[in-house]
Image (cartoon, rainbow, N blue to C red; front, side, top):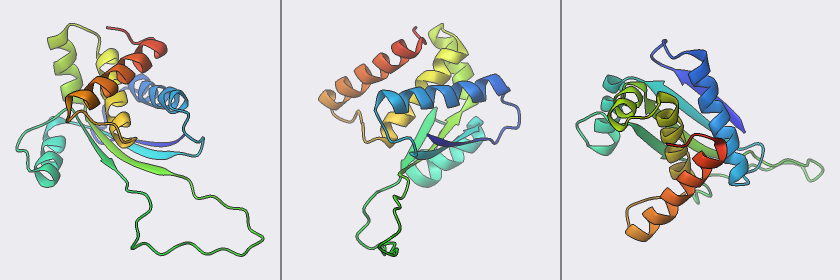
Length: 159
């Protein structure tokens, strides 16, 4: 995967950033995504994610993870036209994810597991949203949460 990871807190340890990268690479392979799949992750604090949550979702509080999937096949988008002799496939950009590192710490403490487990969980959760999974309906939640658990267990981040 082609990942861009930004630390807007300027304080996330390199090991945590590497964990996010490793979990996303593993998850991409687990879902059999193309190698050139692109996405970004921004690690931020509660104040920053609160602003985004309010602006884009109308929810006036901090949250743990927000995903913005990029809609593919926009009918209003002009196609890229290349000469016939050029073999080119545009990489698939699945979107952007924001994770509150404050929430990682708070929720890990509350749930009684490691911050790595919580960061991995939120990373996979947001990643699945970017790949079209949701939990608005009970049957969808069952599918998404099982897949989430399967990925985390296979990676080795068990509760």
